[in-house]
Length: 252
Ligand SMILES: Nc1ncnc2c1ncn2[C@@H]1O[C@H](COP(=O)(O)OP(=O)(O)OP(=O)(O)O)[C@@H](O)[C@H]1O
Image (tube, rainbow, N blue to C red):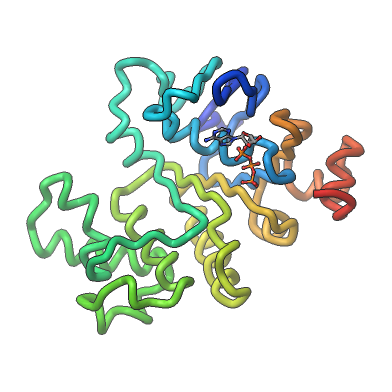
């Protein structure tokens, strides 16, 4: 039996007094894509942000429960959040390349680590851009600005930037919803191709996307995890009426 790489237990998250996640427990497995689905405001992004400790700087956010990664509670005072975010990277809905060249975007995290060796950086750029399925499109203009790329290309450069820091887990908050269908399809193929090396959590509004590329799916409603299981089983045979209504488009 495969051990989970990440274990969320009894997690509740509050914005001031408002409870946005209610006692959620979920195990995530290595080399799988887990889709998080549910209507707007159901708590999906709140869960992703909690896993990356993105609420740390917001005094309105408080949290109970545990998130165990690598045998440690990531909310332990001993956790170094900079290190944590290298291991657990995040991709956002809007592509957010830095206003610098494609090359410098990809090596950003490595430069922060103090890596200066050009050969090491060049190799990381090539490998990361290949992993993000954009090498062929940009290999002849690595020193052009990343901001000049199309939205879909920018998003793949952002994926490459995350891959360059060698994360174990990649959190993605609707990474294709700001993109046209062809660019979205390319990103989906890219993510599917990355499963061998990474574990991914994917918030998505697209039921087709969840059913095409995820191994497991969690359905959220009003901060509660209503149903969690293998994607094929959940889509073929949902156990809860709310899940069925949502995946068949009756609400949300
Ligand atoms: N920074 C914040 N301050 C206050 N309330 C917030 C904040 N972020 C989210 N919330 C509230 O927490 C609840 C869960 O929001 P969350 O963004 O996690 O939902 P979601 O399922 O990701 O929705 P969407 O699909 O619209 O992004 C909502 O009621 C939302 O209004």
